[in-house]
Image (cartoon, rainbow, N blue to C red; front, side, top):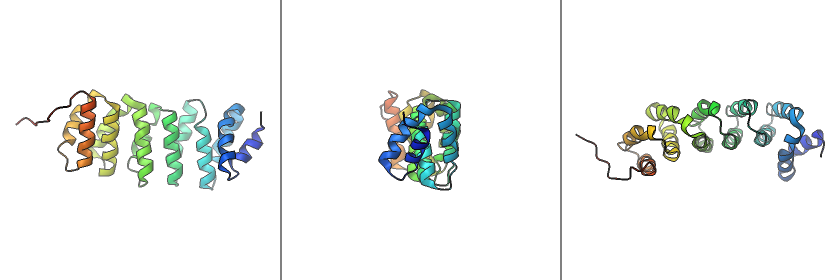
Length: 193
């Protein structure tokens, strides 16, 4: 087994192959490696923070891991926020819902999309917050919310998806129709008078 110091040096070496290999081996070193990654996730260098978050994605799911990944969703670097959202897709945890919902309004469109993907994997626990965002969020956030609701396939979203059909956005209407079709409501939608 490679030593912890060696793996941490590889993780921060700037060599992506070495860093990727180190990220997958760090969990073998348990708590000491986890503490080291917590420190690296607060580095002044975005690349170091990115690799720390990437390595945390290899850890078994736990409250401690979720807390670190949720904190990384607020990083100043869009790439680190993206990495955190991907990591939370590997560790779908209902405790991350509100933080991921906030990222749907992120100026970094990729971070927002990846956060929506993580919410889809969390599933039913994300539905109430997604419905609320769909009613009051910004247009880009609403688009990610309707896409996530369409993919989750939860019947509680039906009224919200039906309401989106009245939006003037073709892409929002597409996702609402897609979600309703997945819920077995593929039909001509007529609003009763």
